[in-house]
Image (cartoon, rainbow, N blue to C red; front, side, top):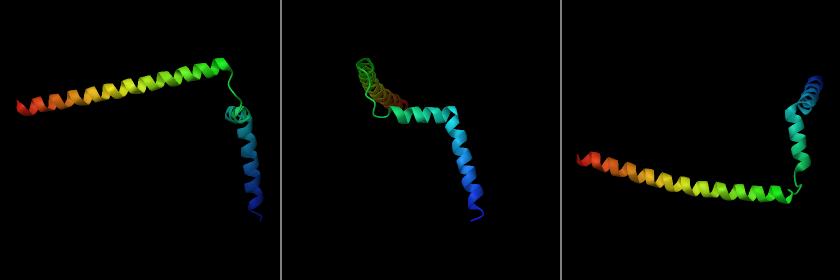
Length: 81
């Protein structure tokens, strides 16, 4: 029991220090804003960004397929020569 008091005191002090830091404030802000709906302009911007990321992923996938094909063609050419 004598060991528990300093450990609890350290935990409380650590919690207080973290809660007063920028990380603690950011975490508290995040907890306060969870579930708060976005206004229409932000929602539209988020949807636009999602669509753009989807398009970029598709383009990246196609580019990787072309690169794989080019590597196979070059490797086949080296084997013949």
